[in-house]
Image (tube, rainbow, N blue to C red; front, side, top):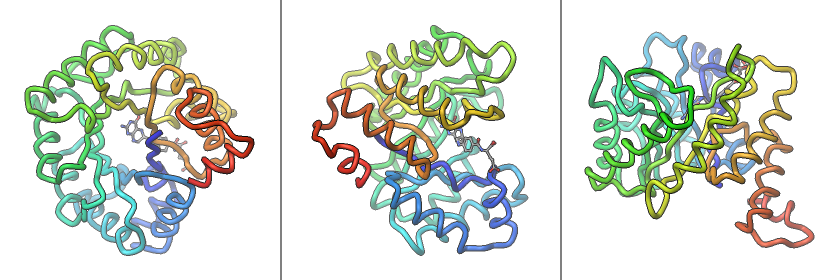
Length: 272
Ligand code: THG
């Protein structure tokens, strides 16, 4: 499982404040803690409050790199914010450019831009592409799979290896009215997307979106993650500091025969 730690995101009040105060300590602590907890990548999202998104992305990247070499997942739907981050990034250990739709009304070529930036960033650079296009986020399984197929096709045309591609079927809060069919639709999409290329593209989701506004956040996140892993999800943007969630990852991987069973499997796999 490729785990992307979600915490360095201006959506969180502590990070938002740290950005406003240029408080490096808060950001660096989150970087170290998430790395120790098993994050393979650290998501970096400036949020919506920062006036200078490009400068904030650069400050976050530089601040994190001062204390740890965990690869980053630069998270923005704006190519210029990603480009700004890449300028100051040491991409030797890899990087993920997160996240581009297939296309959007104001930018038909956005996926091409992300692919080009990833190619320039080096052979280990990956992309998270959302199953979203100029019509927005689809609500059914078939449209999600159809957009995923177009994303895979575009990557093939550009000789961008499917193994550097993460497809994200976009999970939204289950609490939103009329959205309760979506988790099931996403599970069905995950199952089908893995057959679009051989070897399959990676698949990821921003898990915490699902439980936003609910009173059983951790439980909802845990159960859905186990269900999605059973359908082939092999990556997720998650709260890696949630120990119970990390135990679910280890157990699901063991039950899927991706990790060998031993009586101490939990200790072994959560120790990294
Ligand atoms: N797909 C991709 N990238 C993504 C997402 C996705 N990046 C951002 C997001 N979605 C994943 N990360 C988060 C981070 C935080 C929360 C949800 C998803 C979250 N935050 C609390 C809230 O809003 O309730 C903040 C609470 C606080 O301030 O402490 O839920 O889907 N590719």
